[in-house]
Image (cartoon, rainbow, N blue to C red; front, side, top):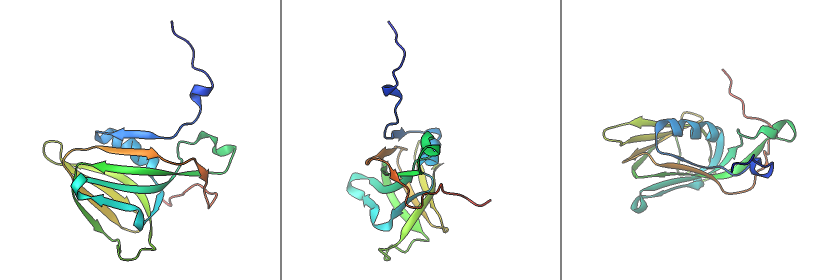
Length: 156
C-alpha cells in the first residue's frame, strides 16, 4: 500500500550530500557558492588523504527567504582521496583572512583521477590532486540569520 507524504516529511532538513561524479559536484558547488570561512578552518590530513573546510554556507535552497531574513548554516565540505594540495593567491600566514568560495569543479585526469579546484573570490584557488572523486557536503549546525541580512550578489 502506498500513502501520500505528510507535511512533516516535507520540512526543511540539513543537507547531507555526496558527489562521486562531475554532475553531482556541480549541484554541490551551486549550494556551496558564496560560503565564507576563516583560513584557519582548512584542514589537510595527508595520512587520511582528506581535505576539509568548515564553511558558513549561504542557504541557496531555502525557499522561505520571502518569509524571513536570508540564512547561513555551518557546513563541512570534505574531499577524500587527496594526494596533494596546492594553493594560489592565499596568504596562509595571515590567520585573520576570511575566504569566500565561488565554485568547486573537477578537472578529470586518467582513470578517474584528476583535480578538484576550489575557486575563491579575489583570484585565490586551492587545487587538490585526487585519486578518485569523492566529496561530501554536510550541514552541522542549525541555520542562523545571515549577519549581512542580504543575499549574496555577483556583478556581471
